[in-house]
Length: 294
Image (cartoon, rainbow, N blue to C red):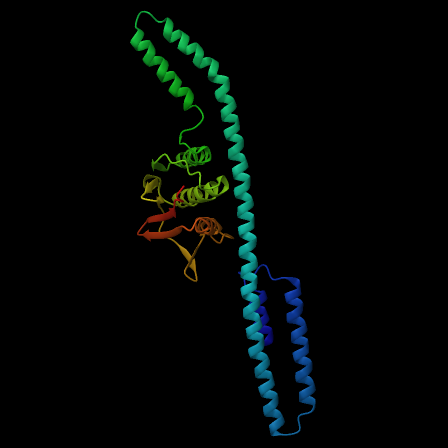
């Protein structure tokens, strides 16, 4: 019975982070229990001693189950913390990448600044059709401004994240619709903006890839309502969800929905609420964050 208990703990696929010292405790505890049981068996001389032996063994069994449960919970905690730390590092790497892209974008804007000047001069020199020349010049300037980003807003990091994820989605033949109110989001640090939006987008794109091409879509909206920031993301999915203890987990192998957990913890960091809804083949993620009063 002790063997079954330990195999259940150590062999469980969910328990991948049991520490060596905990395994040693299990082994030492088992050896000690065997020693006590053996010594007691050698001294059994009557019915009462046999009953005492049964009580001792039964007590050991309950104790083993209790300890195994504790170690199981500790293992899950270790695993969750390990995965969260990896995801946070990934978010930091993504943020550095987006910051680098933003820096290169600014440098590129400086490079094309002279081109804008030339276009302005050309526009000014046009005498045959001045109005048309000015319209053409304005059009060229807009094209230059949109040369690097498909999506633009006041927050640079959000602009880069949205632009890159929109491109990734459209590459997978996913229809994208955005309704983003231009908000500065200065009360949310850059890495947390990356954590929220990058993980929501990654989950939505991954879900859409499992749906027929004609049914793939992602809708993203962000607005300020009263003193709250409201973020909604809706996407199509194949209707298959994996849950463990009422907790949503990833349908990919060796993934436990860490992205969702990152979004949840990040939103809660700002005293916000993160909720998930799904019906038929529609998946919705809804975020509400109070905006601090300045």
